[in-house]
Amino acid sequence: MGHNYAKPATVEGRLARLLARIPDDWGVEIERPGGGGWSVSLHPPGGEVTWGMPQPTLQAALEDIWRLVGPPGK
Image (cartoon, rainbow, N blue to C red; front, top):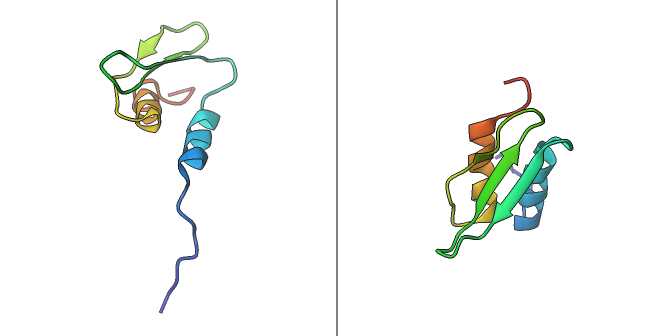
């Protein structure tokens, strides 16, 4: 019988992993609109500012914008 000893990521660990993906020279803006939730924008050097859709958690907002903008060289 196999066992999985991996611990699930904590909220803080998941947030740190998501933020670590963003290159140091990219601009990041995080907002909490009045209607609730979180919105995040990324601005790569020489590129346009892109806003993600509002999400219920900061982690979801970071994942959403990363899917839109993608890693460098995409």
